[in-house]
Amino acid sequence: MHIALLEDERTLAADVQTLLSNAGHSVSHFPDGHQIMRALLKDTFDLLVLDWNVPGPDGLEVLKHVRNNMKLDTPVIFLTSNNSEQQIVIALNTGADDYCTKPIRPFEFMARVSALQRRLLPKQTLEVDGGLVEGYVFERSQRTVTIYGKCVNLTEKEYELARLMFQNIDRPISRHRIMQEVWGREEDTLSRTLDVHISWVRRKLDIGAGAQYLRLVVVHGFGYRLMKITPQESEQR
Image (cartoon, one colour):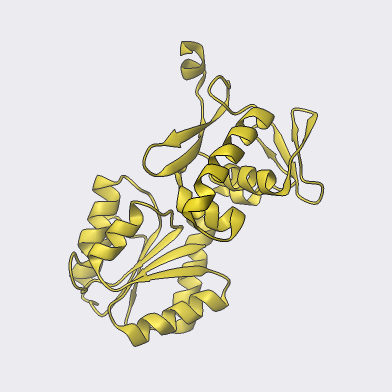
């Protein structure tokens, strides 16, 4: 997972980053609420780990912003010294998915992270390679996608781009996240390359503007989303 960590204690933040990185996750650390809010406007995260008492907007305000303003259902786990029952109830009722108290208990914390990953990440992530997703079968070893029996050959980057979008159907994915996942870096010089690959994938996999079931659409100012089309929406076109 790509995880955002809101924590102003640098030593603890480093310890948490090490735990998560050793488990195979990538972590972006933010020491205050303003920084994580800005990051949420340009990046896609799979999990937010929030401390409550931080400079700027606190963890609860960040959670309210994520749920009420941005309308994101990204999993959220609190990691904080606020351990009163009332505060735990407030966080959970506001939209947090789990709550851990400091001092951190590493094995418990990582077990909770793993539980959230299993429960809340899109089920499509388990079904793309070799599995059927809306009539599309992905074969990673061959870099092919079979669409209702028709085999389509893709380049390596086209395949990884398509796979990322199919893993996250109906979820906006930032340009930053796409470039990191597919090209391993995020640079302005890649921007045009990304747009060209999006165009090729749309055409080859029939997920462009006129598609009946799935469409790869622009999320203006953010990135792209592979969205399911309802029969009603399809008929209106």
